[in-house]
Image (cartoon, rainbow, N blue to C red; front, side):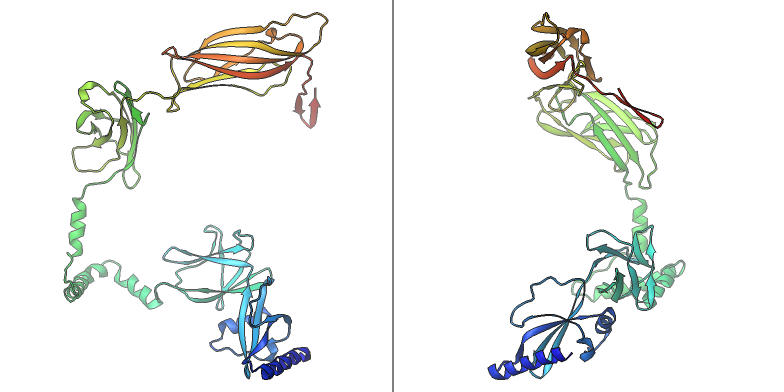
Length: 453
């Protein structure tokens, strides 16, 4: 304490010499959680020399403190003429988020790593706030508090302020609870309507709203809105394509409907859609000339029950487009060098839908002979040929026969020549390697024993 007073005297002497009204240095003192609590909760500050027990650092008053302070509470003290100017600053190890459900006070705390934590000891006034595991938050039921909360985490107490948007006092909550229940709310409604109507007439732009019963009656005759979806098998269709539709429809309460619905394409009635199970509908139709559709237009598919009820709808684009790109691919499973490869073939159009009527010719050719394991051996240029028709709904898998490979270490290509229904030809090539002398290790687990073979 003597050292601190000496520093104060030095600052005061410098002030007299240079006619400064403030000290040259700002002193930083570390204070305890209890001392910080006195400052945060006091209506008027009362700082005496008992707070100046742990000098942490100092810096020139005409600059800012640029060092990083560890977690704790600090007093920044500056001499100002005959008095000291004090400012409390806290470096906290938790961050608080307030969740709003318009009913309770829900608080979530994040640690210094940004992760939610339930290890905080939370106190508001004299009341401890428990952690709700179901909500994963600290919950104070039916609270409309404001002020400062104490959150203690790893020995440090953070003093964090909470506010309220509306002054929702206990008296107001009781008033709403009493006046908002049946039959009091119905008995008082004429009085409230009269008061609101008088207020509306006294405003700069007078107006009167209808009574509440008007909106209740109007709701009875309002068209019902149904939830759900309508999906199509493609986003774009050409003349002559088949549109395949699936729909699922339920009420606002989530109950699937069973009624029969009319299906429309814009103003054209296509037919009747019946649910094959509650809420589920399927329908398909061909885009013929009789529908009198115009190219390069969007069309809507609508569901109707003969009333003004609102059902989900779907739409598609109608145009004479050409598939700009058919994509073919060839790939192989990862296998050991001494086993024949497993080849996969695939063909899709620009909509990523499988292609029909596609044929493929497979040609396996030797590209390089690295090593042979017999004194005399014949290795052909073309090892194997195969023809197949691609199945659009299945995995087109080909296992190369092991009999086509020589007793050697070779590089080879698998060439796939794809031909579609328009006789367009596409060639894809895959480079692979085969080594008849390579050893593979099989690892199996049998009871508590690992077997290597």
